[in-house]
Image (tube, rainbow, N blue to C red; front, side, top):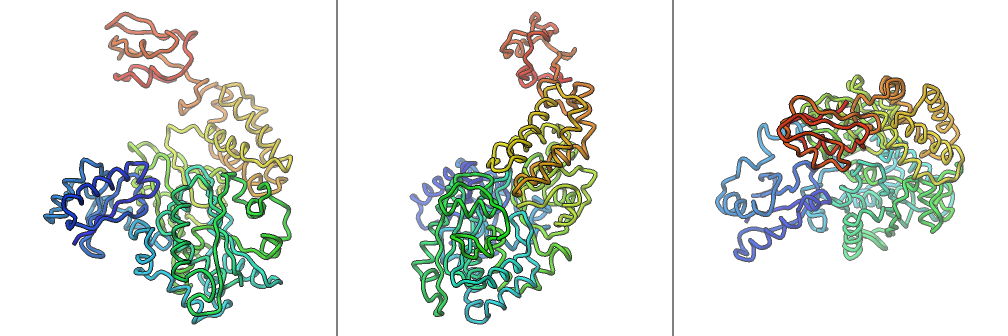
Amino acid sequence: MKTIKVGLGTCGISAGGEKVFKAFLDELKDRPDAFTLKETGCIGMCYREVMVEVEDSPGQSQLYGDVTPDRVGRIVDEAVLNDRPIDEWLVSGPDREKGFFENQVRIVLRNCGKIDPGSLDEYLQVGGYTAIQKALKEMSPDAVIQEVLTSGLRGRGGGGFPTGTKWKVTRASAGPKKYIICNADEGDPGAFMDRSVLESDPHSVLEGMMIGAFAIGADEGVIYVRAEYPKAVARLRQAIAQARSRGFLGQQLFGTNFAFDIKIKEGAGAFVCGEETALIASVEGRRGMPRFRPPFPAQSGLWGKPTCINNVETFANVPWIILNGGAKFAAYGTPDSKGTKVFAMAGKVRRAGLVEVPMGMTINSLIFDVCGGIVKDKKFKAVQMGGPSGGCIPAALGHTPIDYQQITKTGAIMGSGGMIVMDETTCMVDVARFFLSFTQSESCGKCTFCRIGTKRMLEILERIVEGKGTMDDLDKLQELSEQVKFASLCGLGQTAPNPVLTTLKYFRDEYLAHIQEKRCPAHVCAPLLTYSINADCTGCTVCAKACPTDAIAGERKKLHVIDQDKCIKCGKCFTVCRFDAVVKD
């Protein structure tokens, strides 16, 4: 009997996955023995959701994209019951979506989109919880730490600190009571790596935490996850309950003296709580604000006890490393940045979604070979890496290998893995304004440079995009950026100027155009735009009817004119014109 799997991660649900799943359920009512129906998580092809896989046997299946409820009947009749794949809907097979999966190495995403995230048995069938048993029965805590050190795994939450070193320091810290925390407070705009892993393969994260707890000597773990991830929270709670019911969490695990349990703490969505000490404060019930370090959490963390904090992706790597060996993980990537990295691809890229590639792949290769290039074949302009704390890397540096050192040299940071691709229609000054407005609003306010400095920087950027900027503003912007970066208390403030500094460095000409010419080269900043109507106008009057201020005049079937004094630059005329007669200058 064939199995049908419907992708029900957040991306699949938002595209209508639940309606597709219900349509398959309705088909089963009439023919209950026709197939087995299961849900799964995100396979990474968010741009083709809703995804449906028809599986004959493990390794033998067809993957369909853009599935809607009205396509379900045909899939059942032809692909399931009569073994006739529907070629025009397939996304798997020769030359289909070429390069997307072929160029990936899926370690963290090894089970995502393949197993039912709500089934512990399916996780066990793919080797789940064998790594923790190997660690408990065949290895010492020091041997586990050494294997992670050998792997070269660095924290995937943004800082890139060597995971094995962090575990070693925490284990060496004095005291019988220690904690391990999974940071699932993913707050970068455009980032959804951790959310997808939690929704698609939650047991791998639990197992990684168990191995880390054994290594450092912790018996309690906390998953700090933002409440805005309801699907991830629900699947985590389900996975924890399943693990407890099987005796995988609790006392004397797997016939040993190891005891460990996990609880969930839901965060309210404060970006600053991604910082370790602010996160700890939030878990303890205090306002999430960072503190001075040292002491570091590894010496004094949760409730004053030694605490190890890693993010979702870091923990998801650990079971694979223990089973396959640190050397095999280290065989991927570069000498300084080993293994693979998951990226959330968003923006103007054709194949937006989730990918996992070896460290060292160039930016160009990731965007063009894996993700199919730029939408509508427009010109690649830049990529924002590292979220609000990152920077904008221009297309001229597209040959840069993706590893911690090389990305840092550009002025950006690796970050947690969010990557927003921009084309020629993007205004880089407006991009800097957008990201700074985010970090400014998310500042906890504890230190003056972050609280006030980012506010002053934002005010300057807003003046520039409104056409009111001066050349002195550029000098002030540069000076403020350097001061905020140097004097802020935590990573949020220290990295907040990165989008500004990188756009000033690589796209200074756009700042000059806004200030000296009162012009936005990308035609994005509304106060600097002028709308006019050219000779292609057919006099259809659609634009005049759409104009909210009656700024457009003209007789039917004759050239229309825009009264610039009445025009509020809302762009509705440009949007509704079917003849490309309305132009932006």
